[in-house]
Image (cartoon, rainbow, N blue to C red; front, top):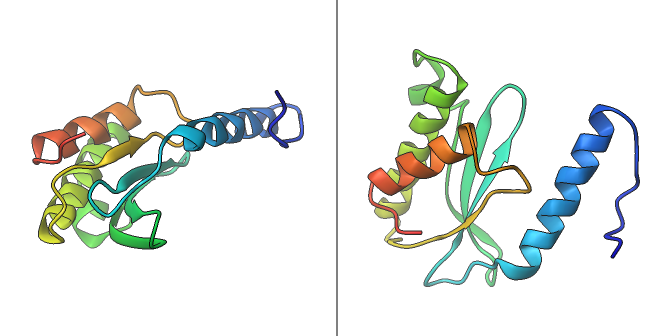
Length: 127
């Protein structure tokens, strides 16, 4: 079944494939006020996480590799993703969110995505 993303070459093909996977995932995963969606956006340089209530269309908490507490951190990009995961979990807990639905954004659940999710779980968020 086609998902409306054009086929391209090279890196553009990888981005189009990730977009198709994300569309497939979003058909099944949706955030509610009781259990919002934790969506992860990964780029070559960094990682961003947002906790979103899809029904209201609002972002309840967010964290990024550009935050001041994460930006000066030591380590590689996986260590940076762990810091972002812990930070978004802390901010979600402060907003009164205990459980979330995880949306990996079309990326494979490995490396930085898994590191962020593990850090969020260790910080107290339930998936």
